[in-house]
Image 1: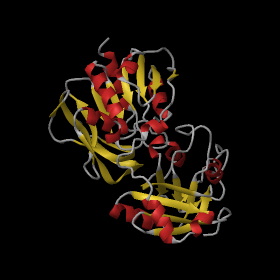
Image 2: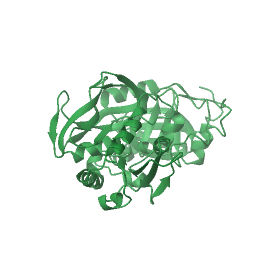
Image 3: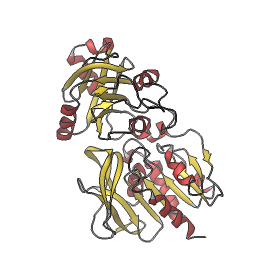
Length: 377
């Protein structure tokens, strides 16, 4: 693989001892995180800047990455959140009229360590068989250390299980996204790792969106007198995010409409008294088939999660807040993709209906949220 950027050696080391060699890409140094893979063939800038990827090393399964460079319009947050980046063959020169700089230059400028290596298919197959695991990415002088030393450092890095990461990526202060046109609704959006596109989708529908820090209490949420409350996507283990579970229960007690996506789906599940568990290798990509149980309609959806909700599919079940049902299921592995309360105005989905680069099949969920907010009026 001959490239202009291959200036230093790089090594990827997994916690089970498997190692991959390649060339340094992006910043030189070292990075630790959970090793995962993403299957999107486009939208890598959305992946890199999604806060849900905080403390994860992401491998792209598409073979050629960087073709469209990096622009200033598509980021989903103010910075790159992935801990490290693994690609097979980076583009030598971006070829989009929207590009402002190369992907390699952007990674380097933000201090994100990457590797270009020929074994991304082997890596993905390994993770599918063994599951997501801790990993270390080393480039430059760090890559020349002996394998045993590198593995010891990987094994000393923290696990994703039990990790409370939402507060690490949430906004430190509240802010407001103004509606497009006349304001129709006021939404309190609890930022557990929210993407830029999410409040935009609500603003397009006349929502004045008040984005609040992850640890906001029920009292702080209700103080803005919202018509509805939104719980966003985010990183980490939902079992470690009891502060969000507590605030959501208070919102349900107050009877406010609730909409959650991704991490917010898991937080709603735990608020209802359900459990969550870690998936073997998670869902990360823009091509996941999800079935609406009521209608039978299948949405091709964008995903980024490593945990899922435990809930009985097929019939309504009792919760702390009345009857509920599994509203959506994943057709690849059958896991829960959505919840709906039957006695209160609350629902959630595990996927991303606001996807920018991915499919837009599920954007109607924002319309449903608006209809729920209309009812109490």
